[in-house]
Image 1 (tube, rainbow, N blue to C red):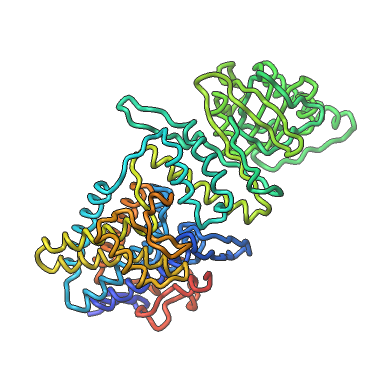
Image 2 (tube, rainbow, N blue to C red):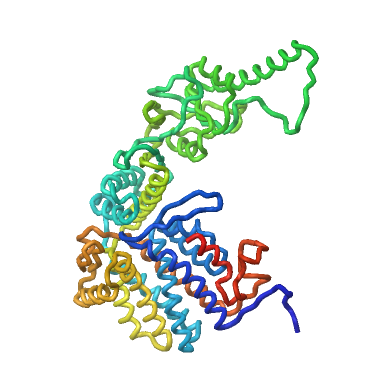
Length: 547
């Protein structure tokens, strides 16, 4: 009996598991070489020819042309890690790949996937408990320790050269937007931190500014650019002649008719400007366009206007000034205006907007770099560090880095495995082995012998040195915490959880039914399909091209 279409493909049982595991491992191995301070960068060229150079795991996976359903599930691990913890994306993906590799060995020993999944769940839960036990508390006002967290996050990225300066800026920024909740916990509102970039200067000239930085010019040269106390209007409506929804033709028979037509347009623009003037606004940040004639009228009234302001900037200005975003000038009220002091930096062509009052707050990290590629990677590194420091302040727990936590967890999981009955015990041990991938890859990427490194780390932890980690610069095993290699416990817990769940999701699949080739892009071109049928790496060719 035939129940599937002619173009459908189906693969079952061990073949399906092997296919899925190969696809997932291919993604994990693609980013492994970027892990750690000595990790390498990837150059990604998209279909438009735009180049991205980075070693940020989630950025690499998002930019890669992945066209495989299983591989995309592993990419979701990185995206979840980025959303929840801000950093540790490469670690999460690499552990997921290693879990599946170890699971494949267990499958070949005729251990049922359900037993492996149960063992992985037990190991994941136990590992997270041990992370909490090992973690050390950190107070929100412990700036030295928070700077070490930021520096650890930036090490190995382009921001590393100026990591001390940037770590100081990041910690100060987070501190300014941290508030204590009624229950004694701390909340960090990263919405009140804006990141602006500027090329042509050294990264060492980056700075933290109170308020917003707007990289725009005034629309008219005769407009004032300095205000000690200004009423600010945030406008999401064009100050232009209203256009009809349909195409129209206007027949003009005499110059007088043309003049009347132009006078009517001028009157319409003047009415809009009068509405702005009557509102009491001194400064207008418009998200859309401003007509040349309207610019002239605004300049005559002594009002500063900036057009085509980015949506993100307008949203941030709302937090800074306390203003409301107005979408209809007819309904504008005095309460919609915000208050701010404004000054102009002609050298950098920037406006500095600082809110007035206790209820408004926000800071801007102005990052500088020599080229667009440099400043883009700098921004990615700083954004990760911001997320990690904010997570540390809110969570209040830190761990020693350099592979120390992974080796300690692996040791404790092996002890725990002795208390687990059945075949799940082997899965717990496989989970422990997978965690030790991190120190092994750190050593490999630093040009060190991974086996010798792992032996030395295990010996140190057997001696009770819980914080013993790898110094990738010297190759020595030392107290990572004292060396300033500090990670947030929340990111590590999230990485373990995400990797375990992704591996279990892949292992649970024993049947793949596809209405064609195993690609997810909807491309009819057979070249993008699975070479040699579904047993191949269907659709991963695009990924190989990106690498």
